[in-house]
Length: 230
Length: 111
Image (tube, rainbow over all chains, first blue to last red; front, top):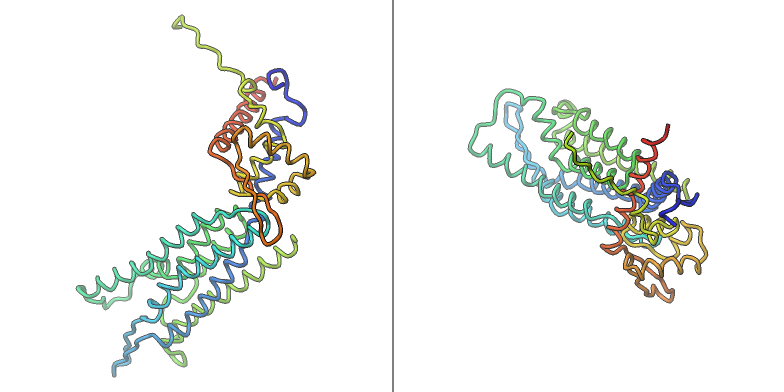
């Protein structure tokens, strides 16, 4: 009788602790972190040739070059929703096979939002520079950070943050913080690669290659951990 | 001093719903809420129950309108899926609140 006494197995602390443990187990069983990282890494690497060949580069006799990365724009606008849709599909399929439902709606919403942010930022910058002169002075550091955040690989980091929250996945959160640090702060902020043997195209390809490889290596690591858990 | 005596709040234990408070049923509701949708076999494994025992608890929850049971087939294999109803979500949330109140009450009255 609940009005007299709570039975031993109904100790509230124990019950809440068991509920938390059950919830955690379900979240772990719903995880497919490595698949998300694999798909995102593959999409990033697949963008490199599109960016390379789709880039419009014009160099003047003074050695100065202007470029427009149209290929990347045309690639990522359809690639982003397709990538997130593929991840959501694999998540739901794997969860269903384990006898569980999926929790992909917030992830899908984030994917949709980040898909819109990238072309919107691109359009805003293009529109701005159509009516304003391109500055002679080097752009401030924060500009590059912001520019990278709205780029697809920055948006990938934002989406991974949401995934880490959904999965209550501390390991993924730690990886994502490191990933965002790499993407926003560590990768070359100038065109240093373009001097000497590297062209502007290579200068654009190398950061993408690093990002893609990092995502694939992370996918491998998370897969191994998942395999060890059984 | 106002002179008026505030009514003493009811002890959290009196609000516990026996249908929900039972340990196994609480486990079923917890897993179902977390998973959105859960299959019978998964629940049986996680809660370490026999099929018959789990079925009895599910019947209680279904009769109380806290879960919905959906039976179907995947290939030739029959599968039973469970989802939490809106009433089930409310009942589970209230149960968790009462358990927390109970713990808080015990902690404040402990010497």
